[in-house]
Image (cartoon, rainbow, N blue to C red; front, top):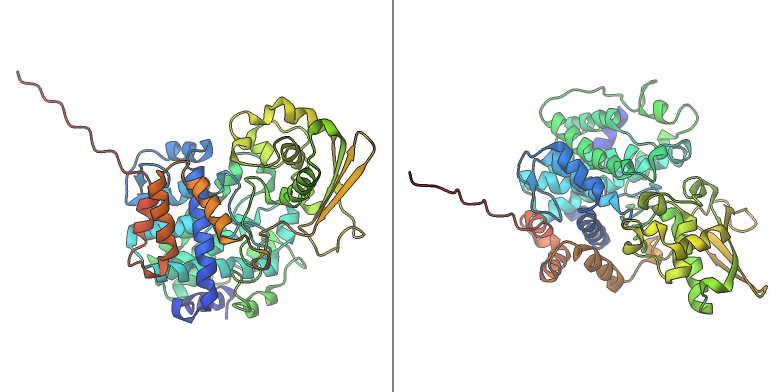
Length: 465
């Protein structure tokens, strides 16, 4: 049986009532976090330029954080770009990227067009999450190291799977959607640090949704788009660099949304910088450090993560989001790393710039951390009096379900993000709605709350002759 069809059967067997109870808990976490960061990212230039470039066509789908309604494919692209614009969206260790942003903007856009119950929405999200993560087990971290952006080169299958399930496509149609998505997978890491990185996610959301719609309407694709000698596996990974046999048997064993789970970001910048930030903040707060106390900072992170975060002289806000040096300097100067530190020209802050030359980064060795730990960091601070302070972090706080952020911090992050665009009372209502998503007859209730009320049409002016 072709790979796409076998995967399609697993996707279509996903039902809300058959899922472990804990999946609902974690689905709410992922939906809450993604909705919040999408609303916060709605005003980012990357999302607004996308909206402007697409034109002014109206439709049924809400653009989060704005008063616009557009066609569902356009909404998937705009909201998908917004969801990743701040680089504040959730992560997952299996995927090696961001699992929810490639899926949820597409699902919300589709639900705005067709309607969907909360239970069906959750099941589709979980199925998409599982599809992308289990595919990742067979093809990553090779893709990440090679230079692909796995969030989207793999995440597109999560979006296609989720939308296919919400549309109730047959096994054969779902397999076709996955095969179409194989030709729409895209994203290269050379564009990290620019607006094109969040565009990867917007394009992914649109592509996954588009693939499902095409399959529904009879579009065709190869049944062996994955395993063909010029198919997805060989083209993206190459012979010897993937293991198809790891993917299908792992389905639901366990569900990836439960274990290792969803990593919630505490800082609005590249997740590869987070363990070093955690270590730096522990030292700064424990020893009450000030910039003038510090002569030198040495930081070690994983080689794979340092390749795109070793940016000692960031030249834009996007560049700063991928600079471990900038993040460490902010942690020392401001004793936190927060959204305002990545707005406008804050990367030019003289106090931060003064610290940057004192920061030296390198990949850590197996003597510092086990070879299979990709999310650790060590930070050593040499004070001007010669004292050396050391801190190691095995993984950032909130990185797995076993090291989860508490509910109050999840809500605090959501409120901080959503109130950037919405009134406080609306934010509270939206939060409550997500907490009871399984009881909603129509998730458009959440979409409507995530957007601003549409402006009433201006009354026509008439004159009498």
